[in-house]
Every structure is written in structure tokens, then in C-alpha cells.
Length: 551
Image 1: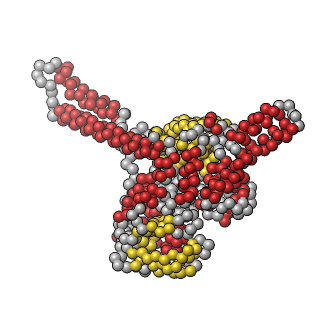
Image 2: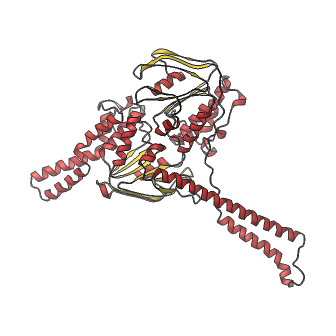
Image 3: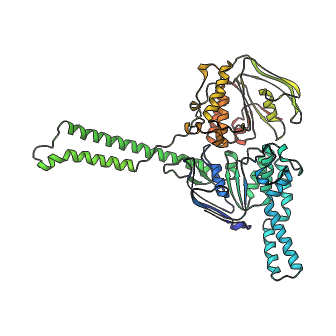
């Protein structure tokens, strides 16, 4: 059940969810979520891929009905989904019947609330000039609403955010000609300019460069309303979140909210897992004691044990069976109140990647890609080399990596790849999700490599051994996986090919915090060559000792 008040609420804005439960395909996605966000509060939402973070935002926004629980919203709401799809027919669901939606159409849709406030004000002015009954109060109310969001300045604010986020600002540009990142940045700029009371943002940093990250951080910190922020960006959470909701499992199965921002979450999460583990260790000790007692009692019965002489006949006849019944009752009671074992966090296990000592694996000279990579780039890569590629959006980082991988033909220059070396690329965006199961997609990809003689049978590693997808998700259709889980599948296929050169394009996008840390550690230790293109501030700090190249 949802209760919604759409009028600009400002200091009165509030979002509350109570005991939310969502089940999909018989599988619990959200279990007992409680949260409360008021004006000035910024709630970060974290958890492993597939824990229901995007589902939670959809339930809070009212676009998805929870199976049970309630959502109460006071104020206007702005939502930024992970992706804005524009299909082959050039349509976008958010734009209704627009046959060829443009940047201007998207801006008009996102600022529809602001436009409505201004129309109401214009109507009130007209009513006041005509001296209609009640016009003065209507004018006062309309003026208050417009001033609350500074409606007259909304388009200018959007233009400023478009520029700061590096987004296309030409209103007539068709959306289908833009990348997913460009479409996302346009919507984000609109949300920041519209001054909604409540912002619901799903992975807002995935398509931002350093300038865009700084702008987003500043706007969120000064936002007067409430913010719910799903993110794996450790730097953004540390700088913005006032509290963090963790959707990962706890000993009672319900999510936890930690005060004290990201630092409070890290400390509280570690303490929660230690308490859970301590309770479980104590339970195991008690279970062992009861098992020993039960075994002793059963042995006494089987050997005809009786109490010492002098004990009453009735007691002698019933004492041992009574002991067994008592132990059974205690054990049943323990089972009824058992503390479940802490669900072990899924640990990434990177397969050993090969090296070709002394060989040049990649050699590129004066590479450009028309309209995408304008400044010629030259580089040489050997086993064990490390390189971080940085630069603003549009500077050509993705194009450079695609050219190195052989997926994009350079306009000028050349790329030579050693015939003995395998090169793997993790692109920013996953392929269109298939209806086939993830395990089938993975097995087919590895089968093609084996058939082509690119990977030996002995080097094949099973999907489960990589620690990237649990078995229940590996057997689901790819189209039913979250964006983060699909990206985990992409990473699994890449690493199972045992590349000599690993090219990672924005590897922190959509991946959980724990996996990013583990992947960073594995790439630092591998014998293969690694080239990373990233804007992620924490990843840049973690790779500060690597050579960096700015485009």
C-alpha cells in the first residue's frame, strides 16, 4: 500500500517504508525492509548484486507493488533508474507516444512537475487580474509552490547540470543517437535541476567523469530534501550518505540501517557479522554438548544401565529413558530457536592468468577513432604491465580499449596483437540479456574457446568455482538477473578465457563493493597484463602506484 502527496513539501518531505516484502518467482527478494528518510537525510543502500536494491527503489517510487508492507511519501519524487532504454523502434517508455523522442522531450518529461507549477501560477495570475472569487488565495498558494522549487530558474539549473555532467544539451538531438551514459546524464541533470523533494537514484555515478562526480556530490550534499542512493561507489557513499541501509543477510533475516554514514556502516556491518558468528559458534558448542549427552544416555540404555542399588524401583525403571526424553526435548528446543549460520559472503576466486615473459602482447601506434578518440595514442604492453587510463567523458577511453581488443577498427594508426596472446575486454555495457540460463551462456562461450583451441580442456574452470554467481542464479535466465549479476557473468566469461591481457572498462560499474575490492586485489597480483579505464575515485586511489595515462 502506498500513500502519496505530490505537492512541494520542502522541509516537510518524508519517505517511509514499513515491513516491505517482495517475492519474485517464489524467491524472496526483499524481506522486512523498514526505512525512514526526511528532509536533509541521505540514505545509502548497499548489498551484494541481486539483493534487491533496484527492486527496493521501484517499490519506494510506486512503480512496483510490494507483496506486503507499506510506503508513505510526502512531497514530489524524482527517480533515476540504472538505465534509460530506447528501443529499436526509437521509443522510450518514459516518453509515451513520441515517435522519435529527443533530448528536449526527455527534459520536458522530467520537468513536467515544474511546468505544471508554472502553469498553475500563470492561471492564478490571470484569475487575480480578472478579480475572480478566491483568486487571492489561489495566487498565494501558487506563488508559494513556485517559490518553494524556484520554478522559474529550473531550466537554467538543468543547463548548468548538463554542462557539469558532460551531457548533450542540444534539445533537438534524437535520444536514439545517444549512448546509454549520455541519456542517463541528461535525466540526472533534469532531476538535479527540478528540485524534487525526494530523490531516488540508482547507481548515479556509473556514467560520470571526475567533473560530473564532483558536481553530483556537491548537489546531493546541499539537496534540501531526502535522498535514497543505491550505489557501489565507495567514495560517493563516504562523502554523501548520512546513514546506510544494508540489504545483505543478518541473523534474523531483516536488513539493517547503520547511522554514522559510510564509516558507521563499515564498523556496524563488521560488528553485526561478528556477533552473528559468535552466536553461531556458541550454538555449535551447545549442540555438541547435547549430542554428547544424548549419546551417553543412549549407550546407557543399550547396555542395560540402571541407577545404583538403593534407588527406588520406579526411579530405576524410568530414570534413563527420562534422561533421553529430556535431552531430546532440549535438543528440539534448540532446533526451534536455532541461530542460522552466517551466510558466507561470496568470495571471488580469480583463476590464474598466464604470462608470456619477454613477449610484446599488444603494440599500438598513433591510434585514433574518428569522432571518438581524436588524440593519437601509442602504447606497448607486456606480461605483468599495469596501466590506468583516465580522462573526461568523450575523450576516447572506451574506444581505445575496444581498439586494443580488436572490437573497433582504428581510423588511423595500427594495433598489433601477439598471435600467442589472448586479450579479453570487460565492456561498460553488457550484451542484450538472453532468455538462456546464465550457466548455458557461460558454458557455450567456454565451449567455443575450447573448440577453437584458444583454451585447453585442462584449463576450463566451472562458473561456480569463480565465486561470481551462486548456483541458484546461474540457473536463471540472464534476462531475469540484475544488471550487476549480468556484469558478473560478463566478468566470468572474460576470466575463464584465461587472457594474457585484461582490459577493464569502468570495472566498478554495477559490481558490489566487496567484489570490487577483491577484483582490484586479484588484478594487482596477476601475472597477466592489466589495463583499466576508470573514473572511480576509490579505484584510482587503490591503483595510485600504477602508471596512469590521461586522454
